Image (cartoon, rainbow, N blue to C red; front, top):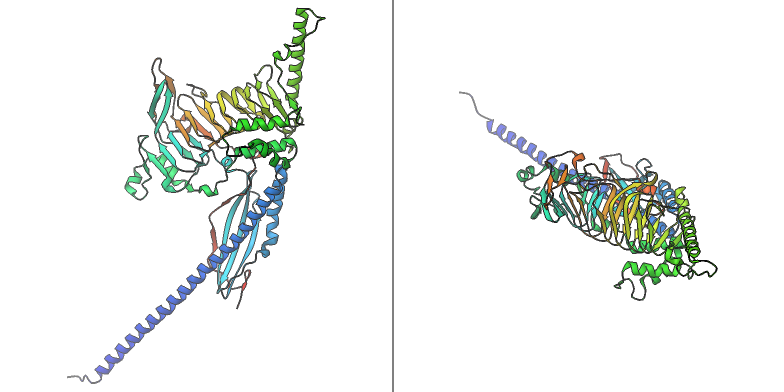
Length: 592
């Protein structure tokens, strides 16, 4: 029998060793956890410090560009653009001047570069790239942020949008960005009116671009055109059953709060342009007093009444702006000449009228300065069919405006001039336009084909409603309208019986409703409803309502575009460029 002496000692030593190993393991884990926690704290702090630097740069850029906007009011847009461009280029040389303090020991932060991305910048915006890094106890983090800087109102950045709710009923095709200031409502049921109100179930809208909403909950859909509900993202099974077009809109959507949307004030912009036309932006404050009258800005007066009152004071003989007046035959009814027979007097009146018409037509075709037309102006396509501002025709940066103190009708005519209208605007027929127009009344575009003069476009900003009606009704090939339309009112557009194709954009301050189907549509004699082709045609060429964005507007019309009083800033998501780095000084800060 073997001896078991000493076995208890071996067992005790084994247990002690095991406990020691466990203790060392616990201690090591504790120390490692503390180290990881400290490293994570340093990581978070360094990212925060780098972000703080970028925020400082953005505060500086915003304040400086806002000041430039104020300083350059009344001066050509090109002068403002050049000043902003030179400022943004100079920022990299000033990167060491963005000084901030931190109470953290072993911490430093700084700007490594601020560059103007000339390749990404366009006529509508500048793109700068800011890089900042920070060190906290040896942990280095580098952040990068792209920033878009613009001095134009936001509505020009969208194919379609509203500061209110956007209702897309049926199958419009939208290429470009969409903005909904309150809600975006999607439905496959298009509404239309033909003797009576009817509906047609078709496809959901198709948006090849980004839909910007106030929150993702503010995008809703309906299956029957009446009851709307939120997109069921939390229910994977229900979400998977949604129409692919609805899912595409949702998955390509972004949040843009109304507080960041740069609005346009139509009446204030009208005053800006009248001041430009008068020759001095400093006149704006004086003009505003006359424009708003004794009742002030909140009076019940219509914008047309206000505009007429102001322009009356500027036109001859009381004012000093060049003033034109369209001749009418009745102007010569009171002509008396006792030396002439009745027939001779009639012919003389006709000769005088014809001479006045020729002179007026010639002046419209050769505008060399800003001018006022006293009363309504009717381009009928025959007697009068052209308005040309010589400066605009030569792509000059000089700002000229023709102010129509009344209604403007454009029928089968060509306009290459910027125009202010105190009354209403009517457009019809074959029209070629290279123009920015501000209208204080309402606008209707009826059976019109708007193409660009020299491949440019129309920018129409209307205080009142904009009605676009019966475009290519019951035809199957659309001729495009080329322009941007803005209304301070609500708007309804149709691509059902009519076919609507717009190269540019449409924006409403109030609610915007689109109704559209796909395929060919035919009227049924004596019936209140249309006959439709199959509504399962997915191709975009089948859509009867199409909007394609056109960014050329910023280059083509920048002289006449409305100014904003504050810079429009868009921030891309921040990128983390580096996870770790060497310990060292990266900028100003406190080093131990």
